[in-house]
Length: 131
Image (cartoon, rainbow, N blue to C red; front, side, top):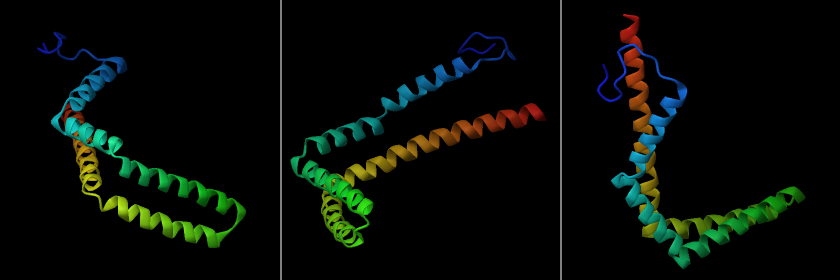
């Protein structure tokens, strides 16, 4: 018997049960220290007027690029691309933004390592069953 579900060894589980367990795991990850730190940094980013101004300016410039591309105006596209690069550098040079970007990497690493662990464990179980 499995202690966690009182199911006899060898009983099969359905897709819905697997998805429910995945939801439980997702909730655990969402409550992790990494996720909490990420949410706090995201809130700081959202509340920072200067950062939001830069983000909005970049988005506006990206829309301008799309418009000029549709007109075939490569000169303006190049000019606006340079303006975006300047805005992006200013944004990237803000310590809070760099911290947020690092936290995004950390969260992605946590998710990727979780997916990798599940994959490795399932593969190991399948190998054992074949033996």
